[in-house]
Amino acid sequence: MLRTLPLTFNRGDRRSGDHCWGSSLGIIAGEIVAREIIDLEARSQFEPGQTHEIIDARRNPRYKLEVEICVYPRDCPVVRGYTVDISESGISAMLRVEVPVGEVLRLKFTLPFGDVEVLALVRHQNAFRYGFQFVETSSAQDVIGRTCNQLAVEQSVRRS
Image 1: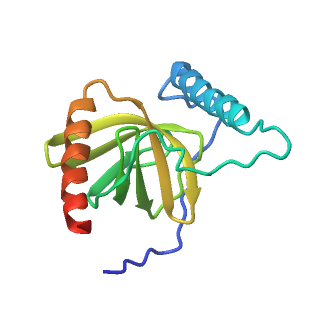
Image 2: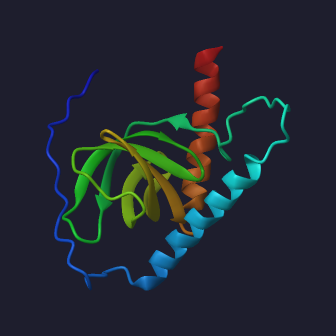
């Protein structure tokens, strides 16, 4: 079923000094981005004339999953959407309201093995689709991991 999303954006109030999450999350997000940039730079340093086969560089495979998700940005009311896929390290979702790339925010969603509430970094945006990288998953890791394992089995059976 095709879902259409209205073309509305809500950037919220971006006054300096409004830091509901505190500076430590900004440091965590900055460290994650810095590590990824260094990793990408290291992988792109090839010798002249060498050819390399491009393989999906994701750490964890993604699995199709459509459930409702609530996103809690620092300076906006709750943003509701639905997920597209999930992995053990992140999730992607379709949202009707713009959220800033690079911001750490709280996500809430329900998986087959339980409810998940987790902090995530907005890694990228393509139109209304957002990619989130889990920043801390200690309490939710078991639920996310068990769900990914179940989805791997279900989706491999469908392809067979």
